[in-house]
Length: 355
Image (tube, rainbow, N blue to C red; front, side, top):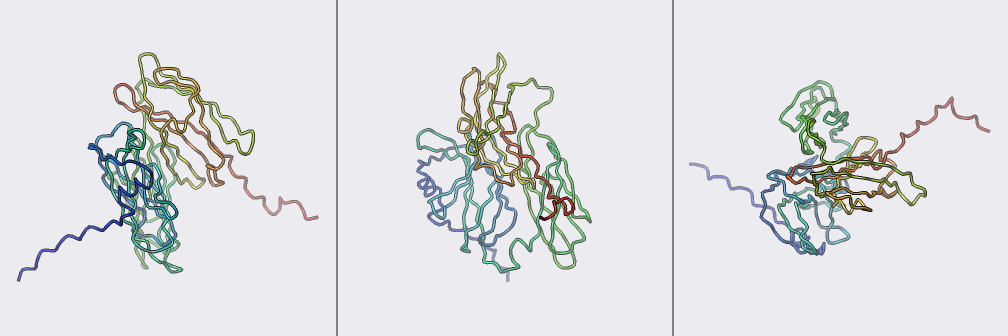
């Protein structure tokens, strides 16, 4: 007897509060679905499931033809509000305290003016949140740490709670390697656009085999022989009071014969352990323009507020993105904040004697 063909699994039912329409209403937006050539190729997570109350990182892969003024963002039902929102292609998402199935929506959107927001593409990630015992959380899971050593160079380290003798690395760009040590390094090819790669490592030992995932962002590399389409002058000012923040004077000049339309600012917050948080906003929400110099040039300032700088933050990097008259992307970057290295604790012999 021939076995009946297996049926594909039924699609998960998205609860009413997690639908695109409900989230737009909670954000006080008017949702407009647009036709677009931009596509969302998939959503990666750094672990297959997460314990209640712990953190999971999600990263969206965007493909197709880039849409001018498109803003990537994540939206999901909030615990205290109708909806939570965070811009960018990566999301450090904290699981609720109650186990269950939760849904986070990634969107490519365009501001249509007023309350109208155009949705170019979207995809939903289904997340399994479990109740975990004392030894079932992330403390007993394999971790993958990434440290950037150059514009396209990274060093990776697998931290395993179990002894492992073999490691298999997938760097997310079609290349892989195997090592007997828990470390590996990799250099990515420079590309005109910034790109996020999904890196995976499998650690094998006598006791168990585990897999971990991390995400690294390779900054766009400008074409070396191309003339500059915009130039930057920067002057940082130290805060005069504890509430003032770190202010940077910014001047952007665009040469005669050129023209640049600025779109967005991507802010990277880098911690001392080289973890990177990326947030994207409309450029005039970040930069205060004091004088228009024409063709896309301007004088203005940008401020990093004290509330945005936690003790573990090492540096804040802003990247201004736009397009010239041909549609080619133009980018300028600067360090908006840089902390002093923490002083090492004095040795016992260096401490003053007790009085």
